[in-house]
Length: 122
Image (cartoon, rainbow, N blue to C red; front, side):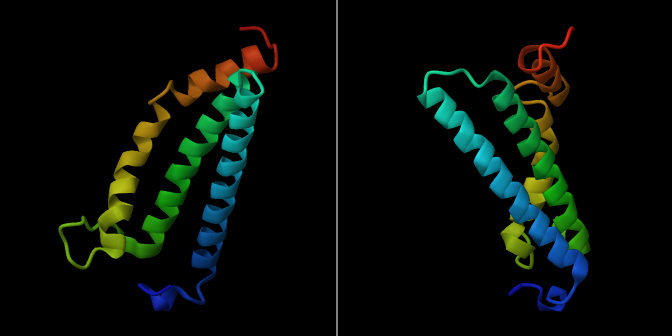
């Protein structure tokens, strides 16, 4: 709001921020659940995969929405003194796709959920 006051009444901006907050809260709940399971001596196989998929997908969606909001200025790097959020959005947007592969691709995570979590055949 402070950096882009013209977005204050924008419905797309409002929805993008609300979606981002919702995604952060769901990711936090998934992580808390996984930690509680580990603390209880359980292995959160399916739940960890769910958290990984949710978090990496959310990271891409939120970064894409904010890049759409900010337009070309969203892609400014930190070296540019006028970069929104000191270039953090550009760095996050460029790094987001890598999350789909680190720790096992999201497709592999979906197979883990189907096989180990739901007992479906391979």
